[in-house]
Amino acid sequence: MSVIEQFERALAGVNHQVIPLHQPRIQAYAQNVNGHPVLLLRIDDHFDREVDGTGGIAVRVDRAGAPNRCLRFESESLGLTPMFVAIVSALLDEVGKCGSQADGVDLLLDHYDELRVMFARRSGRLGESAVRGLFAELVMLLELRDNGYTAASAINAWQGPYRVAKDFVLPLGRAVEVKSIRRANRRVRIASVDQLDPRGEDLRLAVLVLDGVTAGEGRSLLELLDEIRLWTDSDPASRLPYAQAISALGLDTSDPYYQRWRFETGEWRWFSVRKDFPRVEPGDVPPAVSHVSFSLDTDVLEAFASGAFWQEGSPDVCLLWRAFERTYVAGPRK
Image 1 (cartoon, rainbow, N blue to C red):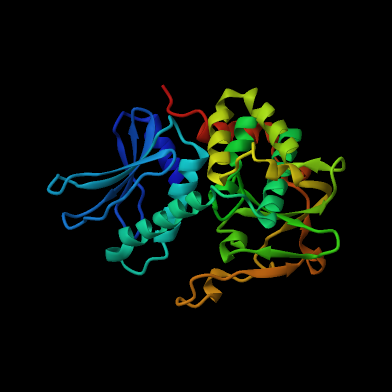
Image 2: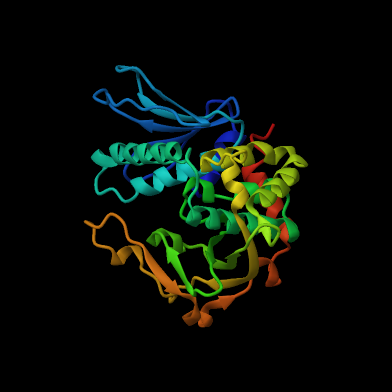
């Protein structure tokens, strides 16, 4: 059972119920506190680290000497939100790389501090690369809309604002990593080995041609944001997740700076990231190397060309988003 399924189980159960997450390096639990999901980490009496909350997540440390002393990450929202899912998944994935149980909590908290700093730094303007990446992800949201996904299911699938390994995590073990590319260029940058690490998922790389254009041509970033905002306004379950995503991006849509960004979109190119897909795998990276990025030439990936999930005659998309909403959107069952 996945970590998210364990939180779903906790939320569907008795208030304050605790369910072990079976992590090899730490003692971690999912808990339901009045409909709010909580990540519990067991700590000892020697723990004295200061841990601050972040937007949407409150952090509390039990007093020294308390029985079964814990560090608690509690969502400020009812039910599972993309932000809580993304942060908890990222923290537990990071601690899985730890070599010993003694270092597990410290490694998790170091990564949590990095995430908090990253979100704080996003309060400034996005650079061109970030704007292009965001534009492509917004176009993908509209692709999901046009292929039967509700606003809630699509926004809850969108993990890009939280720097999770994959930009979209869909039902039934499906994931999409989104990249943009200029028409005159054929290379895409892969920011980390995790982006193309399937980890048992059916993973697709989706590449969108984007060319910058002048005022009056193409579509603007702000127009896309307005279209998606109107879509989410029609679905109450999607409003909070969308607001949290925009907040995590540090995007001030009232800033005139963003009026300049307009793009003409080309076709999507889809690739199936199979076992033999050309990439750097986590096992190829020496333990002393903390980060690896690389570029892929899309012209030599034709052997891996595929379609979007919804073009392949696989299970009906409406069944997919309904299953997704039961897991992520519905919250605790009565």
